[in-house]
Length: 224
Image 1 (cartoon, rainbow, N blue to C red):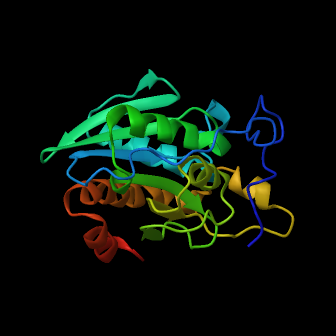
Image 2 (cartoon, helix red, strand yellow; image 1 turned 45 degrees about the vertical axis):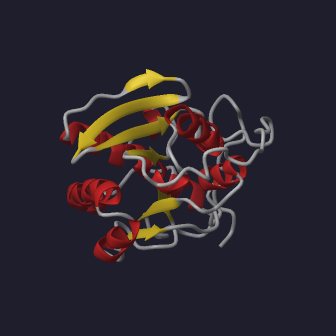
Image 3 (cartoon, helix red, strand yellow; image 1 turned 135 degrees about the horizontal axis):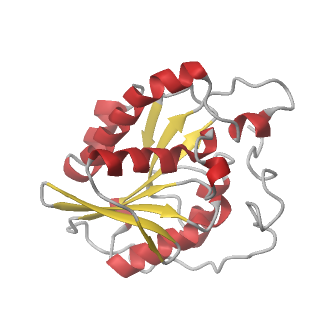
C-alpha cells in the first residue's frame, strides 16, 4: 500500500506540513506506569476546518462528536485540541480531537498523556483505514502506521507502536488517480445511510475499551 496520505497536504496553512515542522522525538516518560489508572485517553484523528467535517478522513472526529453528543458532554478548546470528559462505571474518558492537523497528532497525544498521567495502555487512537471495507471495525494492540500520517507522527513522537488503535474502514472504492479526492471527499448516500449504526457501535467500543479491556473488546467487536 502506498503512503496514501503523505502527499495530501503540502501547504502548512491548509494541512499536513510534516516537512516544514519537525517534531521533537523522545521516548514517552509514562510508558512504565502500571495500568492501575482509571483514566483513559480516546483520540480521534482528523483535520480542523468546516470543509473537512464530513469527509472520510475525519471519521475519528466524527466518532468522538457522536459519542459526546450521545453522552451529553461538551468539548472545550484546550491546548493542542478540543477535549471532553466522560465518566462511566468509575472510569474517566478524556475524548481528544487534536487541532494540530493530522500529521502532527502525536504532539497533542503526548501532551495530554503527560498532563493527565495516562499510561500508554490506556490510550486508544481512532482513525480511518483505506485497507478495509466501509464501516468494518479493526481494533489492534499495536502496529505500523500503514501509510497514515496521523499514526506515523504518533509513532514518532511516542517512540513506540505499542498503543491501541481503532481503525474504521472507509474502503478503497476510488478510480485510479482519485485517491486523494476520495479520502478527502464526503460520504456518499449509501454510506450516510449506514453511518448512524456504525457510530453507535463505535460508541460501545469506546466504553468497552475502558471497562472490559482491550482483549475483550477485540473479541467482541473486531470484524463487525
